[in-house]
Image (tube, rainbow, N blue to C red; front, side, top):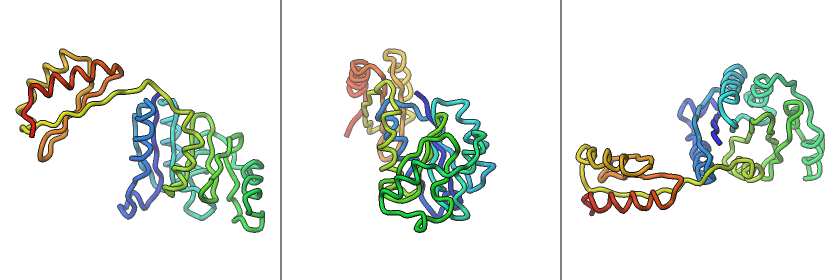
Length: 227
């Protein structure tokens, strides 16, 4: 299963808010064996949201969108997703009923709170107010991290893939000195290799076969200088 993550918000692009949602979602998806192919941030503009969502839903198994939910003037994510899917925005009976059951009367709610793309399944917000939605492989979640995480728990079973096993080897050598050994490693073992230099070099080995990645890590540890 492959997925794209789209985060929405002018404040993200301006650097005023750190995009922790994308990092958290990528971790959750990777743990479930799902491959994240794209992480994209777009501004609070209907056209940009619609264009990116439409492109990604054609290319990937699912698209997760976070941010820009609610009834205020700059919360335009639902409108963008509705445009991408060719659906009108309508008041969602299930979303409204759930909010009323949880203490919000119609008079309490700002106009538009329960409006979702027509035909979508409402994703109820256990931590906040604004509902999310899922429709045609697109999942729309809030931008507030606590709300996003709680809502993701409602849909996490929709995301699964083949488990990926991972080992990390730390080498106390320059990265350039390791190139020949990493080339040999790739030839001997069917693993994905990542190399991340710093004070030392972190080498990550990944495979869908646990025995292979364990053997590859053991082989490499015997051939690098370690602290």
